Amino acid sequence: MESPFALCPENSYVILTTVNKSATGSISLSWVPPGTLHHVGFVVASIPDTARAFAESIGAEWDGEIIHDPNQTVRVTFLQSKCAADPLVELIEPASEKAPVMPFLKKGGGLHHLCYETADLDKQLAQSRASGAIITRPPLPAVAFGGRRIAFVYTKNKLLVEYIERVS
Image (cartoon, rainbow, N blue to C red; front, side):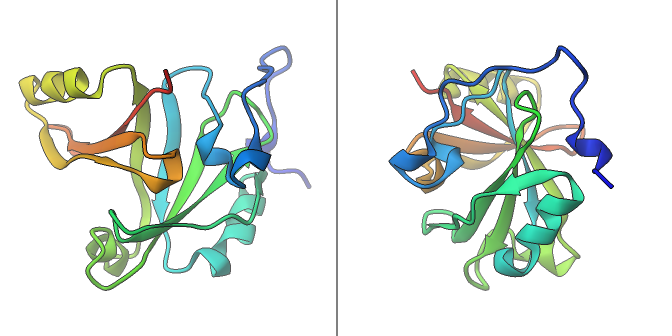
């Protein structure tokens, strides 16, 4: 039985010409979302132990690429939906006991954040601060995104949002 999450409404497909996994091995470096929602992040205890079953449960595909990011002390991988308009799903595994996501994992892990692309990261962070959000992780380069800067914001509504610089 096919997962209901794998079904795309008829005529809602998007033709992606920007995907080039061969350049680096991970879809995360070349995938460009049709809107601004880039990915949804989930914290897991072990990517190798969960990625295939996770992908299967949502009707997604996994390329097997696991990326270590020493700046964030995590390992990440990305799942891609069969519907090209859907955002990526990021699985995040702590790379050490000191990883920022470790306390979240100790509470059970699961849905962690939403990530949006932004044309101007500094301007987006200023707007977030002005609306009462807390910058929990200032801008830093992310290995999974070819060094593009990311930052994390905790909103007044208790939502953790990651912002990533848009490819220019």
